Length: 376
Image (cartoon, rainbow, N blue to C red; front, side, top):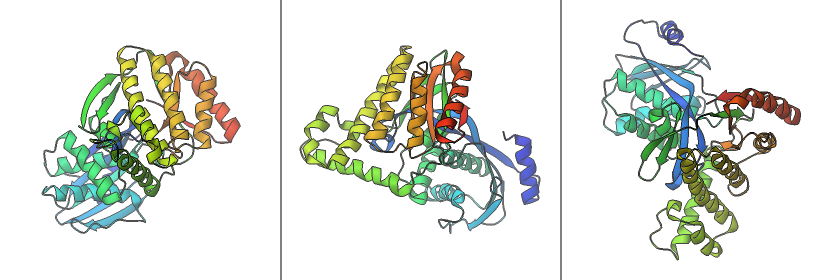
């Protein structure tokens, strides 16, 4: 794990000065339930994880940004008002996106030296990119005394993701990275951008298992899902007025409009509509201390993501099936955008050690891959 002294020493070694250095961080997140609902103005239920992206920074006397990614031993430079998307250094795009979002909002900033170190597993669906955006925003906020609120920092990260990186994601990842609290889930209404803290169930743990398969849902596939949902909304509007997004659609309404759209579009919409209902059911179960109902919704979510949204893969399905066969795991599902990455599992805390041993041995036996396991 990264510590502050390590970051300071690394910054001093790279940039050769000792004064005026600030350090900011932001956590990754795991989504308990509510996948691919955020860009459909729906509901999501993420929680932060205790793995961080760290950003150290110092002000320069010019308008140049010098970025250094310690984990890659790579550097990238750009002029304040001349940032260009980098195919070679993809990690740099998230910082450049935040800088450009600040300029669009009219904030006065200059050049800076920026060092980045990370603990959040990459390509795992645990939102390392949003953690970097929020950490970079926090660092620049402090360096240049901008007085930006945590909510506005989240929106800056979203603008970086949407407008510079080119992924048409919703607000969930940046919101929980900026506003999340440990031991609580963050229920986010992605239409109103309102949020509530929900206590996680006592006596139970959420365990994240990395399949060992890097998440392969690139921008084009992600944006394709966005377009498919938009196509479904357009079809529903032909007969149902007042529909703004899939947030406004019930399963009954969707069924009535089934013949108005191709089957693949219908299935994409069915996942989103049913997933919104599962999020609200999960919140109710958390508030009324019914963990079995939480788990039931998680298993149902995975089936929907696998069959209707088609973003699962063999390795994720294998992890979920192993969890289900233990009988004590109440729920399991892929978490994140899909096509690799992680599952999240709900089980009694006194079963965590047994689960870790079982999932490790069985998954390696069935796939030949060693999984990584993280406690939320």
